[in-house]
Amino acid sequence: MKFLAVIPLLFLSACGFQPLYEAGGSSTAMQAHLASVEVGPIADRLGQVMRNRLVSRLNAGARAEYRLDVVLEQTSETYGIRPDTAATQEQLTLVANMRLVSLSDGEPVLEQSFRARTSFDLVLSDFATVSQREDSAQRLALDLAERIHRRVALHFAQDAADEGVEVDEG
Image 1 (cartoon, rainbow, N blue to C red):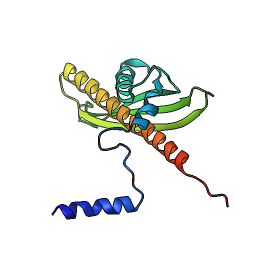
Image 2 (image 1 turned 90 degrees about the horizontal axis):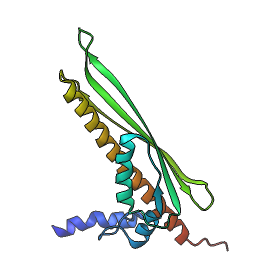
Image 3 (image 1 turned 120 degrees about the vertical axis):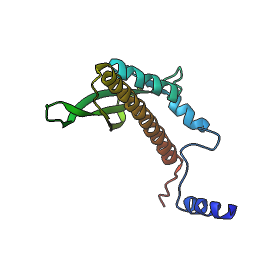
């Protein structure tokens, strides 16, 4: 039975698949690259939540070589209109536009936009609705922070792989 579990791993290694992180956690080189990223301030309370998560995930060090700038845009749309014109649900969308900038030359090395969306029921209690909205927005911000962290880690992993490749010019 254990042999059957190993077969898919053989196919993955044959196709050139390499894990982003090593078995014991992040590799030392990956941690060094991620620690060299300084996270810039992000506006509003959601931005503060996202920035705190990014700083803890990146383990930002004292010597920054890159700056991560993120701009958040939040929109909401109500739908499910009842006959008395009251909405029954709200859809919340959070867009994070991120830019990783090299501090040595000020040039962006990575730019990408991430989008997350959720919906929740609108209830008669205003307090419950506000609590749901804030909780949903915070969960979206944390989800986007994790996705940004993975994208930055992938960028550094691809750079390391590109640097390790020797080109035969003969």
